[in-house]
Length: 339
Image (cartoon, rainbow, N blue to C red):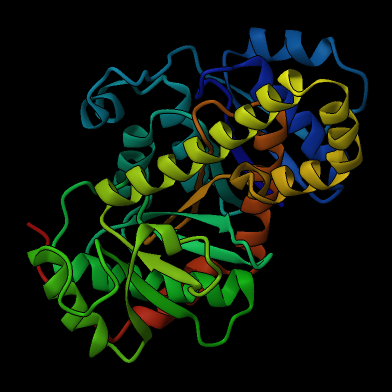
């Protein structure tokens, strides 16, 4: 299976991105990588590693799209950028099944929208990471940053896409859907939440009602529907809280003397297990749902381990035909207006 990789997207590009590709082909013998970026730099990194890299094809691209640029203008004008050339390769080659990038979220979304195109019936694509829960399961957050301003019809479509994605990837037949709001009561939320609540309630989905941010990782929901603004805040708040808790634990152990260090030593395997389970980067990146090809957006600060996970995730999404399942799931729903 051929995965296209934007080597020059992300804070640690190109080295960590290339190392992620190297790890991926070692882990999975069925994966081929098309590494798009400055071929001289990519080849230099590959030369520094040991192994057979015949399953990594390099496509030269001298330009880079940065986070400071207008996504639309960059996709239109930067034809020689690694991201644009990655999308061009993806769409020109039927055997290329997915694209992975840790670059600008706006540019990846715009490229997916403009190059791959929307699935018929979907008003807007959405960014959907798979997050761990305290019950050792997973929950899909849809959307976590692709659409900061939404209409109720968009949130309805996020619910449909999240449910289809959950069925395909997590094998949950009747996913439990929650709508992110400022309270669990039916009347909570702003005008957007009220309108979306009514649409989701009548959608035929297994809609449980409003969900507070503190319950996202509770394990009581399989899909959380949110506009991209609040979804992104919720995601980063959860990430920041987890980091803060582990930092406080480390400080407490250092200040607690010998007894604290002995106790920490005994708990270390458990703490490592918890940290690994609660690290959403272990699952890879976030999939752009609603476009005609699999597109996975890795965290901008991704290092090799997370890039490898994203590549493996992209393969799984392709194998499960997530695009086809979403297309089938939403073919009869109203696309609404997207102005």
